[in-house]
Image (cartoon, rainbow, N blue to C red; front, top):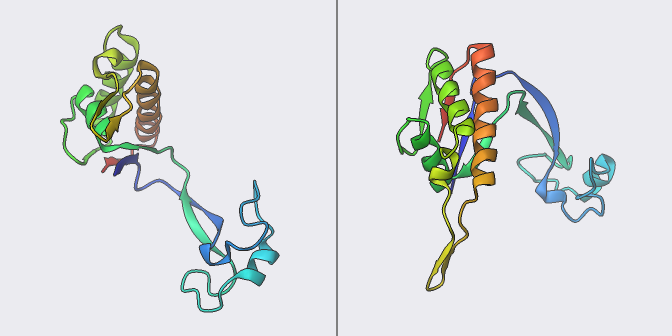
Length: 159
């Protein structure tokens, strides 16, 4: 499972995506874009998503977002004083204070380290651990989302 920090009211732009019904097309996995005409030839005529075109238009947010595992998200939200709930939201009035907390957590020695943990194995379950660098990367991602929210007076949601 995972949780995402995102801004629901952010503007979106249309983005063309390949449909899974056309995955047998040789160019399906081409980067940066597949051959759209070839996808249409391999698409299923009864596909509910692309209607036989091999692609569909998805609305993509222009705002930054951050996805992380539930455990990592709970650690980050607790570090920022937001509790360990499975989700929540911040109004644009609350975002500047949480942005300050995130900047402090990133820059005060020992704060990011406080949620880093070593990996372990118990039977067949393996927990890979969390390095200080990965904690800092998550904090930087949250900072980008919060900064956008403050600059654009948007609500931030995670869950």
